[in-house]
Length: 295
Image (cartoon, rainbow, N blue to C red):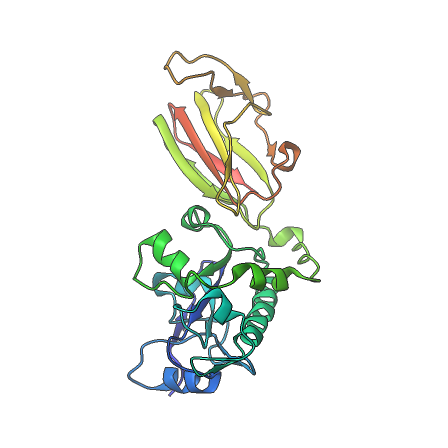
């Protein structure tokens, strides 16, 4: 018998997820629990203060994050969601668990290694960005809230994310950019209609936006907001390459920007001072379906 797992599917792994075991006090005991035939759960690794024990291959989906299993690498920490910040940072014994702070250090080292391996940003992903398909580090609770999937709330409100992510990023050089051929642009169909809207994830890809419209298309960009990993947004859109201002008479509270076929783009997010964008939200009017591409 092997630990439970599934095939990944075709979507790339974009999330590093943290969980608490809610019972097992050591990684070995947790692994033994997952091995039981009656337990329909697993994790890529089990972590305590002394050991990071891998039990599921990273090429397969562990059974930890419900519908998020195929797109996540997962770690179970031998702790409890009810713990306070002080308990997590203790170097003593808490609820039978030795040195929770050392366990956090191990978890941070694991997060860094998996982020580097997957080219995932080393920051906690905001709920709005997670819902929009962003890449980053999450709690199981984040997935529960973003996707309305399940009831788990681990690793809990007392989990010291600042301590963990500071260690994740301390002294680690940015992950090298993948070669050009590894970049996969994100594309989205912008449907015809009035006051349409859509959020396009863009973490991990080059920050250029193209609107692919034909010469007879009437595509009006009413608003473009930039979503940051913190969940904050920049906006409204103030104009730029590929669009010129006009009043469409629709009462949209300002002059939208009409696609200019003589200069179809791209927008460069970094030129706009927005180099940490994880999603872009668009609102538009259009008489035809058009394509948007970020990459």
